Amino acid sequence: MKIALLNPPASTRIIRDYYCSKTSKSTYLFAPVDLLLQSGILAEDNEIIVIDAVAKPLNFRRCLERLKTLNPDLTLGLIGAVSLNQDLEFYRTLKAALPSCRIFLSGEPILEKSEEWLQRHPYIAGALLRFVSKGLAQYIRGDKEPEGLVFRTAGGEIKSFPASREPEYSAGRARQELFLYPRYFFSFAMQRRFATFLTDFGCPFKCKFCVMAGLGYRRRKLDEVEEELDYLSWLKIKELFLSDQSFGAATEHSRKVMSLFQKYGNSFTAFVRPDQRDPEFWKALKESGCHTVIVGLESAVPEILSAYSKGYNREEITEGITRAKDAGLRVVATVIFGLPEDSAQSIKETMKFLREVEPDFVSYNLAVARSLTDLRKVVIQENLAAGAEMDQGGSFAGIRTRSLGERELIRLKQKAVRDFYLRPGYLIKRLFKVRSGFEFYALFREGLSVLSKNI
Image 1 (cartoon, helix red, strand yellow):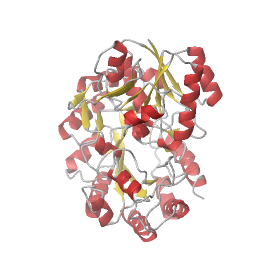
Image 2 (cartoon, rainbow, N blue to C red):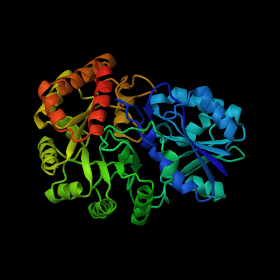
Image 3 (cartoon, rainbow, N blue to C red):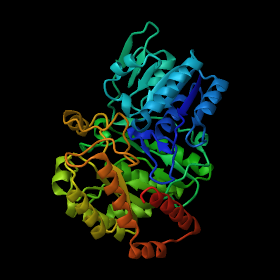
Image 4 (cartoon, rainbow, N blue to C red):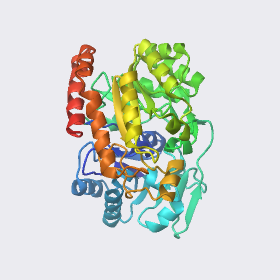
């Protein structure tokens, strides 16, 4: 069967993968991990075509023409809350142009009430509930109970089968060679060519604003991790963007993965919780090739950290950032503005805390009421949603707080960006830490883009 893996066109540079769609806050763009993992699962028995219309880029008309020329039997496409209306319009048009093509989707809008969602959108054949699931491959083979899949039968009946809860998953070898788009660019990479990589799925922690808490947590088989690293080495790609949401959560598994990274000489960026208390972990992370860690600071307000079950406090955040720096790692702190409890004062407090802990970079995000989250329940109950489309990247606000409207949130987020990055002392320190021509280019390119969106 001919299968198209599709990241549909968009009016701007957006990212739809891993159930967390957003606009790119600068110029970064990477291979959609949903499609990447499915490429390994589906390639065993099918012909795979990859179309990333954001990375190509292809507009609505050109992307549609490309698909009509290829004439796939089935399309697995991404859909995101950040671009919901334009995504739905594209898939409606695609189905009209290729009536025999079955369209399956992956993305956060279809995670909840999936059967009702399919009833409302009859041009969609089904939804893949977890992108590490083999359900779509099983469906194609004719299995009666494909796991992690909701689909419409030939007779119009909608059937739903839950995702596997096995602690390990197998996705084969992702077809990385199909995702070598020149437009992919990662802000924190140390080399121009890089690959998106995954060693686990979901997250074992239960942060109430995060979709990962509702996905379950599964580890990737180590032999597949090594097989893909070996293949990337053959492709001469050593730089990785590790898409694991909490690397180090499964300590023993992570240590074995780090040994493999060290064996293949990889260089990488990883999401790591700041409450990793063992200094040896941070040292091992550095020795395995990690140069940058992304840690969830989120808020400086203790009550907000507690309310959303972060599992750590301000002191542990400070200690984690210190341990990472002591190990020689660059630190990116993520923050979230716009949770219902947020006010101008709480945002000001977070901005002050950031200057105290002094990460190398800060990623500023606006709260989004993701599917499967407790935050979504609160937003619906208190009527805080500003619209069906939501953007964590901050180009627009998807929800209000109890005291701040959408425009005020955008204004405060832009001010926070300027106040952190435009400090003369910070800029001088950042320049003195540059170690290569590519790092300087990336900093200059990304810096201009970030500031242009926040002036």
